[in-house]
Image (cartoon, rainbow, N blue to C red; front, top):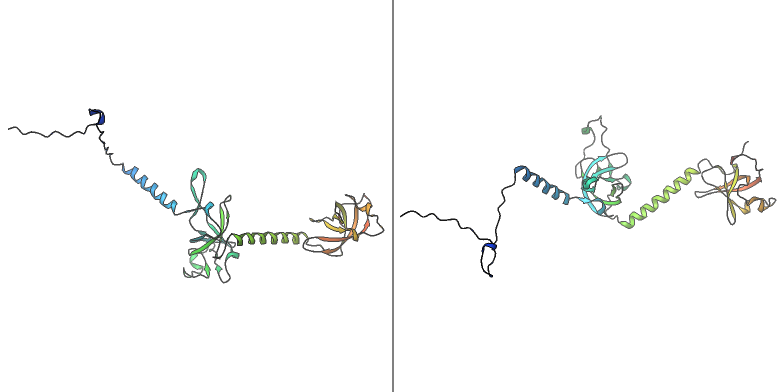
Length: 275
């Protein structure tokens, strides 16, 4: 008796079946294994995706947010930390953003140790313990808190104060602006001494006073009460009138003066009176 060979069972597709109640069969296609190069590329892309998930976008930062990272550099004006913050660069590529820790955001008793100069061996600078909270230097890990964020320039600053919040940041900004204005005014009024006589020109008419140009970055304030009674007020209250004034008072906000005498229209520009 001849040996019979079993024929392979071939599943029929739906269009091979007859009858109205026929149910289609499911066909499973088995793909061949991916080439090694393609598989490696897929693994690298998966690793990049996982790495990106551990990062924080710059635009998602908020004042008071807690971050942890390592110090990558210290200069005279700030320490820079890598706290896994990125921003979107050209083509959607993620670019790292280092945090800036300014000296005034470091509590008293904590020291910023500047990086050694390029020509000096790094081993020569002090190397405190990694857990020393009183020292900020390259290589140690620090917990910081977000203070200011500048998305347009790709920068953000941090502080060691755990109580920082949006309200504190707004108050600090206002105080910084006021201090900057005060410094600018003081700088503009350098060299101004009370009792100094100067040539002046009326530049603006106020209700009870005049603003006069005395050759400084800021005009002087001349009240009507500081104009001699012998000079008619209508002769003085005209833009462009020249006169000689004496500086009577200097504050952080303005310079007050008193009128000495009128000058003819052909006089020189405002400034110090020639002796």
